[in-house]
Image 1 (cartoon, rainbow, N blue to C red):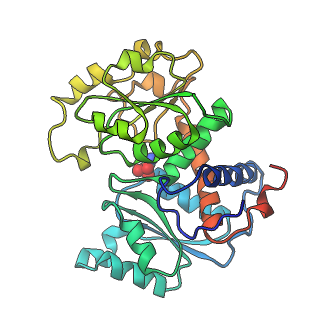
Image 2: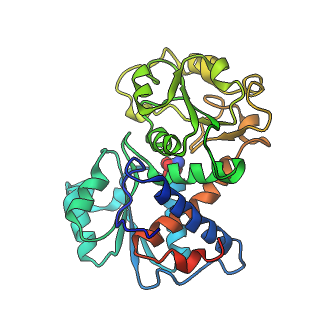
Length: 315
Ligand code: CP
């Protein structure tokens, strides 16, 4: 198939074929990252601006590295020293960045829909790097890429559990859209205040019973509690959350013996996951981070109009 999107805004709108195409291109780029010279000239002469208006470690650095590996020029917007502190709007900021000659904008913002908004007013591709509690499509792409790498390409019927603060999680929402499209057997688990039954409408199971949710699961993805997005008290205390839903070695023994443990980061060690599991043999948390570079290279390359056939011959 041929990629024909300019923007990457959500996983909700992508087809399985489009997700698979991103993964195929990412597989080719992952091989490039394993060479001694980790760089190709695919986006030479292009300028990519990382417009991050919320904190980030992994996503911003992975987009930065991905653009550099494709030979693009990269400018990272520093929100704290920018004119947004003087009241400049998102629209004015983005239009000025485009007027300065940017060829693509990668945006992270606390308002759901802000990437869509920019895609409607700018003439350049817009990539969503996380918008409020809505979506984090490149995280969902790198997570499913990592699952397919570990479990095999066909995720149909594979038992996946996402555990934690689902309600406020853009990572959960993007993964739910991708995993439902792939036909995975997906269960969302956590306290009823953070995992409401209404989520079953997305085509997933909802469980508030950790033992039955984890039983024989092949993947467990932990999510941190998103205090910054919660406007009410969703559970009595962090200690109580950990005692009910934190992943420890006893609870991990309920998983399938070959199960993998995932987390998008940042981790709150000792809250949603014990350190021995985060750092243990079954953890693929740092593989997720590494895969994030190749997956984001694929997203930048395709949205810039790159020809997938030029990099995937032999995949
Ligand atoms: N997973 C993720 O989005 O991490 P950052 O917030 O550090 O980018």
